[in-house]
Image 1 (tube, rainbow, N blue to C red):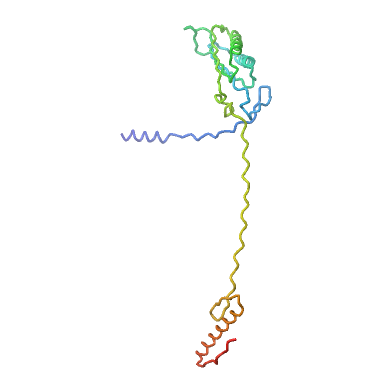
Image 2 (cartoon, helix red, strand yellow):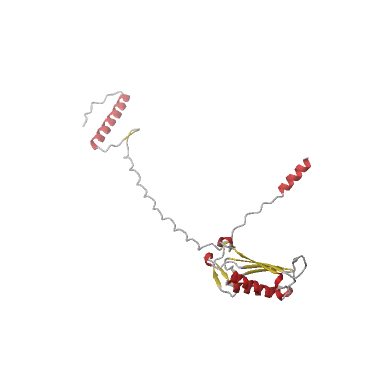
Length: 238
């Protein structure tokens, strides 16, 4: 029991959680087969995805790339799509049988955003059959399935889908709000008068200030006289 528990704990400790992948920004332009620039700012206006995936049990050898390029041109011409958006995948020397027998045959799937109709399908089916006949694959041993992808959001491309419209402009930054002015500091109180050890407030009325100063001085003089043992004569108030 303890051994199983330790083994389970060790297995859990070895589990490594992969770090999330950073999403790369899709490029704004692509390059076609002839070096022409393709504007990717508004994918909703692009022709979309024509693609071919073909399986065959014959070995195409060194002529495989030649066949793929010829098939790419046939798709572009039959579906009226620019070849810069055509993708071709061919898997040869596969394990295929037809009618229960090992005979040369091929299975193909063509997908496209639109352009899938009777006339286009017939033209491309004939073109692929003619190309496969060079590898001894008879036309009655070839299936080509055509798929209309339908809505543009059903086909991903360039990190988004073919339904992606032009990038939305960034909203303007909010206007800067000026900071309110700093209020002036409050006025400082008037300085106090120092009489002896007492700090007396300075009033704004000169006569009142003089009276307070007079009585403060008289009080201080009377205290000093009393300490010395003599009495000061009365002082008349001004």
